[in-house]
Length: 195
Image (tube, helix red, strand yellow):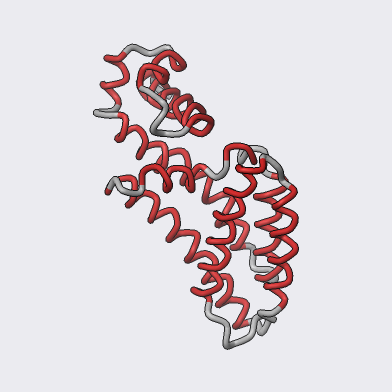
């Protein structure tokens, strides 16, 4: 990796770490500069503004991680209902990257920056990918006769996604994974109704 690309990646990674802990709005460019140990000139060489950097964090860091964590597990071709539950269990209980006390990075960005059209587009792209992966999983399950034919993949996707973002926020408030276990138990009950 060339030095300029390495510097840019370093800025994105260190800025993300700060933003994930402190929030986007409360993290200043000066804090990012201090953490990354780059000059203001170097920062502005790579990004025209803090917002351009924020959108780059979503597109270049969150999306690849999101794909591996939220989408790929649904493309394994197993029982879709088991795959959905296993994915959610893994995300909530086993994932070392997503800290209970800081919530979901995508949800945090949504709460803080959805009003910004560039953030909104990047976050909508992220959500649309996950929604489509869930819909595809449910539709494949219907073809295999593992999911009732009357089940709407879109409705399942919206239910799963809203439940996830809600429970991440409750976990953040309580700073405890205990609420995740309650959610997972109810999720399992819900998924059984789709058979």
